Length: 321
Image (cartoon, rainbow, N blue to C red; front, side, top):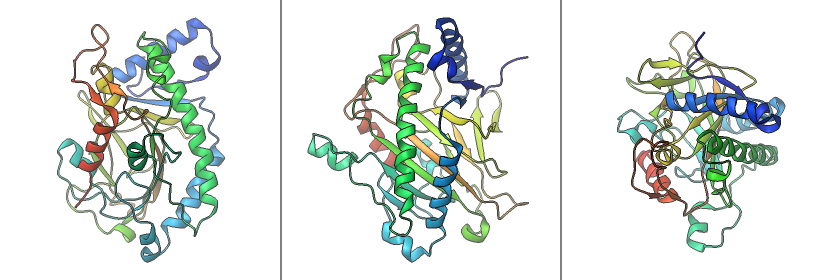
């Protein structure tokens, strides 16, 4: 039987296996990322109870009246609440869609950075809702797990390219990250979808790796490949979904695909369906020079970019209004 185009990998061989097991895992990862740019990852060590608790606390915020939530309103790429109509992710790839049918709580790196200009743009303090005081501790615990997992994944990716475990992870001395808790309510909250409107429009992510904890649903995640078009993403409640972002695709000279995806609108036959996703967007230390690795690993030589100049341009591109 052929492997699924979005395979499930167990991190255990990478964390505790011998050289042969690590090499076999690296081959599987390379093949998957050359295709759809997505993986399902088990053996990640992130407790299901913690993930459930983050969702439960976040939902307490999302169901508050809009006037309460508005006190935490933020711009795209900031810290706080992104309300209805704030984003249209399809804009990043040039697809003109109506605004995305979601709300988000968004948090990010906030430990001070030595450069005051960089610090002001990328390390501003997080804004934690006073109405749900337990959310902060839960998110900080979850983000600690995500940061550790991101470093392991980047080490595995460097190894999978034959460039060594430190090739990407050495750029993680003071990395930024973005963390969105995305709430996808039903039509009783968002109204009937307009033509071409999605919970999240078609796009690729912007950074290095994205680590997603998602829920299955009819109005859920779809992945695009050149061969198969759009298809529902596979789901395993024990697994996290990992995909490659644009910076990583550029870094690998398009050997690996930046995984194109979208989230469908509330389904017509189940209009009250409600889903919530925890989305960790991995990045690197500001000022990192991202330069395509040459052939035979890389396939396209992109002009070098400053990682965070690139990220800011992308974040600005999806902002509605």
